[in-house]
Length: 215
Image 1: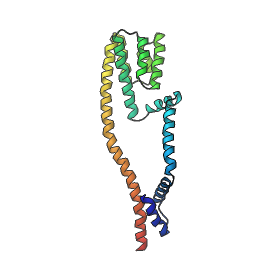
Image 2: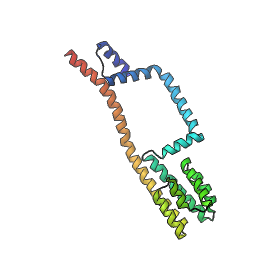
Image 3: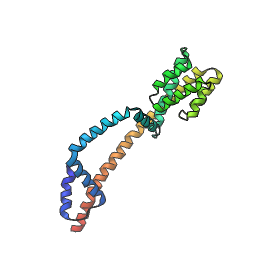
Image 4: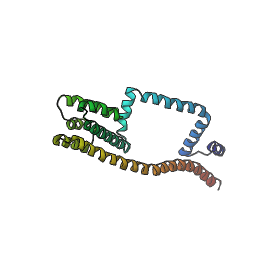
């Protein structure tokens, strides 16, 4: 609403505008003129993305890239490891067979990449390999977690070691969540400041130039 009215003044001056002001005026004009197209496109894009993300290929691509996102990927991995260790420890302590427990635990990870690792580990364990060896081979689980599982297997205290793993990574999840929420507020302020600063600077610069020209 504001920028198009100011752009009329700039147009009447007949003076060349800075590149940032031209970008601002173009964006404001396009949004003001074609908002009725942008709103359906936005809704349609969101619905299409949601449907694509539920397909096997879409979810696999998203889960793989979620793990690569700084801070967020680390948090997702820690949550999955904590769930894996806690659920597997509970199942084994209840007398459930390891292969059956892994089949059940796979469903609580909520990430297709890690689910595939557990499925491959299950097949490898059936052929005689250890849990720690198969998890380490994938490279998707933290080395500390793999080491603790290996110690638990060798000592015959796998359930207790998995409980320790779950406790450690649940604590790490709390730390990561606190860190993320602490970073989020300043980050939002910085992004908003950059946006507002760009608009103000793009409007004030040509006005100052016009004043100098008149003087």
